[in-house]
Image (tube, rainbow over all chains, first blue to last red):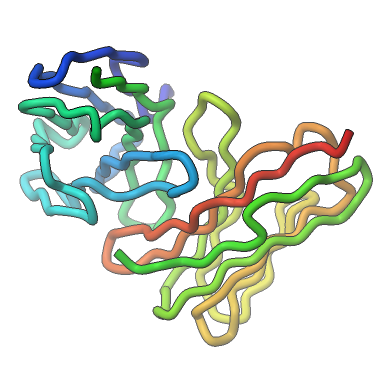
Length: 112
Length: 109
């Protein structure tokens, strides 16, 4: 039982490049989330998917897109990376019966 | 997003001390959660609180859901070196969590 997994762990991009961050959960959770974490700012919600087939914007969605591929997988895409997107990205999932989110280990992204 | 004010921003602990941190909000939350994050890792859930006034313990950790539903506190008793890390409060409404900026706990030299 791996919980929430994320790939890659580290990534360096040049400005303007694109990439997709992958997330998968094996807890049969309905809801999945993408956050970014910057020093001194806690975690900010980028996008979330309350259930399979739905996605909604969070607090900081600009510059990102998401895909809920199936119940297990939720990906985050940066179409044209900018230095302001240098951050640590966390994926999380939540079940139906308890409002407890479980986090993956994070992807550390640097955009130069 | 909804703003959670977490204090203190940082603290130093000496082994054996009790420590306390709290979180306040201008908004009402249905659920309060407390997470701990170690360097290079994702946040790990410590305690979840579901009812106003609820007091819940998990080992040396005790947390309370404020009666107004706008605040919560976390106490750590008899701190040990592995308690160092960043502690986050989070409030839940409508499938979403809003996080505080974190309390960084460091061992006093």
